[in-house]
Image (spheres, helix red, strand yellow):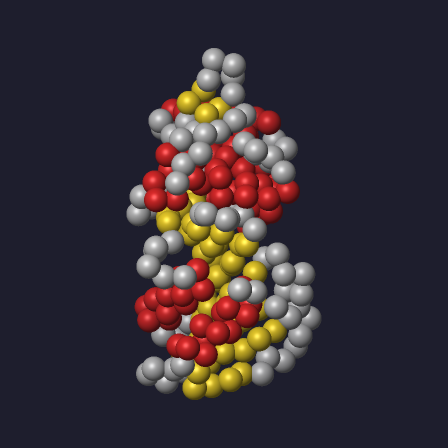
Length: 214
């Protein structure tokens, strides 16, 4: 399958893709980046399933998000090309887990050289892609996601990690006082997490930048 390219600005506020469609888009260019992106979006198990990838491609065509060329290859443009491009070229995948008393889910922030997209899971194994706000840095965008979640769920929590980091270092965040945060850092296997209380936005942003390896 082949694709055409598009700018990140072509992404609307949000556009949804089913898991088979994501699998099809992740295989367009092939390569390790596409596999890592598929793992982040929980569809890696479908990449070698020809029937599933074909079903995803057919769905994209039926929705007008892709075109089947005369040679049988798949061509995408506009927002879908931007999604396909970041899936196959991202060098940084930030996973933000949003936790509540009832459970939680994750937002995946994928960053390529010129594309920064956020993927949010919805019902029926769909993912909604949206462009990062152009007036903030990637780290600031991550901070805004965490702040909004804890504003809506003051008794919840959030974690942030860079999926490419082999150490697995994870930042934990929960609400402190009215204008502060409580944070902690951990690595896999670590039993106790030392908390730092009374952290302001600037310190929290600095910790996010460290985890991101900016």
